[in-house]
Image (cartoon, rainbow, N blue to C red; front, side):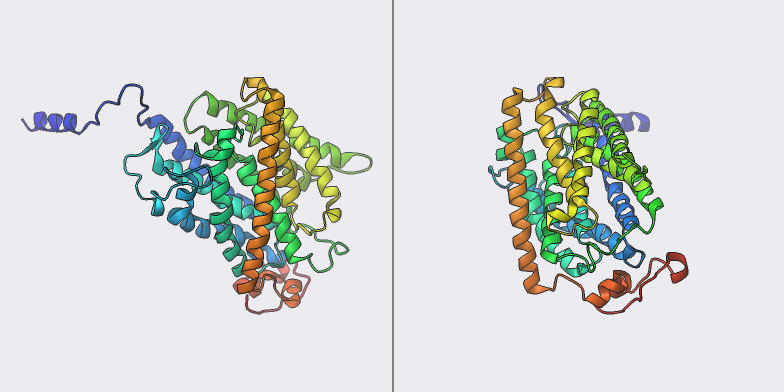
Length: 433
């Protein structure tokens, strides 16, 4: 009798059968999205290592902390309002509805075949790394508190609306037919352009461009790039929101485009009497990941190699003319993310025909061009205004003494290395943020 009761109770506990024609919860898709969200989360500490290795030893912790702290700032703000501004139901062409404030109103809700709560977590990881990317342009000279204040405002007022425009079914760029599978416009163009504006507002590093600013830990750079590539598989393939053929194509193109970009970057470095470098290999890999992101599920693998090669070429030559840009983008965020994101977004329109995606090539290119122009203008002007507002509350830049001595002790009262371990060649001055 107890067994019969238990069996009867188990039967009563089963969910109701799905309504015909309406997708229900899919356990396989949900499991994949839980993994994909975790993979994307890993990208931010991977970026911290990548950026940290590229900076001076006395500022390695501060550089990495900008990425790590983005997890806290954006994680909280995404919960409170960011998600609902980007994806909340009941919105309009410009902004999402407010029914998901505090991530409420999601009980039993589905996005496709996965719980909306999982989708919200997955998208939170995107918002986090978008802000962390910007930090590479201002390392070594921007006050930590000022960066966090700017980052919080940027996440709510720039990132969330742009995500709504491009990815929400209510968004005006989405309705126009914009193709951006995993964030070429929303993340990479937005972060790259915002980074360039931030670098211009702060002014160049002391001694730039005469003084050499060389990476202090190239193995960090390689490790960070590897973690980024690993996590990017969830970034792009996870954007299918299901374990299906679309996710499989996105994963495959996310493998081959960076491979082509890495080889292209090394080839450009090796021209003449040049030598291929480890930093170049890591940079080319990341640039290829950026370029394929908007197109990863819309193009064939051979087209992905074209996107990777052209994205790397455009970014490489942008780095070469960097002093002419009028801004000291310390870690080339604009060249590697902004430029590669623009190239990837436009090539998405040019090559989507390879899988039958999008509209006619000419028309789709116009749509992509409009989305790129909107992203550049909105994020550029918006970032400029936000930085000026923050400067009314906090000084944006550290003192010259703190910049010369490095940011770690002055901002965090910690050191990444002892003098013997890290080769600290400049005196360290302790002071408040």
